Length: 94
Image 1 (cartoon, rainbow, N blue to C red):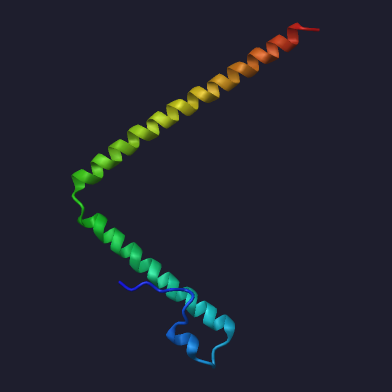
Image 2 (image 1 turned 120 degrees about the vertical axis):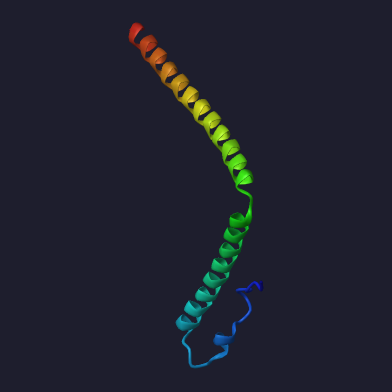
């Protein structure tokens, strides 16, 4: 699959009847087309990938996200506890 270099003029940008804005819009559509083609290739690869590989990857991701959630929850609890202790200390000292 050919990639489009945004710095090189495309075939439609050689047309002198187009305004700069029209050329820019056509160039953006060309980049969008390239991105969609790349996405289609990646989706095709995923569709042809065995389901067990995808499931194993999702399980690993689930474990990692669960660990991150637990660590985040512990950090938030620690911060809240520290703030409560600080508030109690400030309330006791006149």
